[in-house]
Length: 324
Figure (cartoon, rainbow, N blue to C red):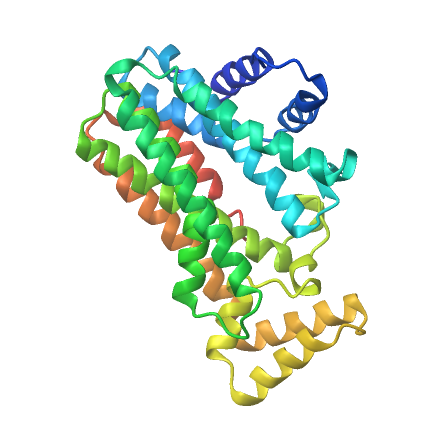
């Protein structure tokens, strides 16, 4: 069995060795840039772990796993454009470093590079894997559209918000686990369990990100809290607060959202105070923990020996307490 660090090293090496068949270096430079600043490579590593769960030979899963990472970064390039974000991972975003047109064009090419990676899937499961990927890619775009639509709404039901983050974030983790399992030779039942494992992890991770933006310790997580509140971003915390607030609390929340001239620090303090009154912190922690427990339950049912699940259990375990 491969360790997490060994799999990440394989992914990083494969990304460095990617071939870009184009005459225009200016088209490729932003792609190399965004892939070079990539973070934990959780999606390709999860795919390789899922493959390794069923098969000791993972070579045939490396390029499809890289395809998942290229696609993920393609979505980030375009998301940053839509969000007008100047930074990603504390470095300039592609449209900030180059320009808007270059970011759109280079981002588009990344989608086709991802396709090329997936075409290196073993022929016996190529069609199945590519359909999983293609369906998931469409779902991610639907999730992004929901996110855009929610910006225009005063109130978003909790179920609608959870569906949005499931599509925008969780399904790609779910697909990573399923694709790796399929290439590794898993049957339909086990590959579905792996999908549900990844989906629940993805939901937990996004809920925790929402939580940490308000309640995270800057010394631990390395970023200033309150950014989502300052930007009036619809997070699980805000959606839940609006759902359970009294009429007076509801009005207070909306007054804060509408006050663009309010001192940002004071706005975060006041909104956090309302969250505290409503018990939002505990509700958010409990929901994230429920998703993590569901992920463990899915993995437990997969029909391979427990010792082969150690690395995947470690990933799920690393999320427990992340929001404490």
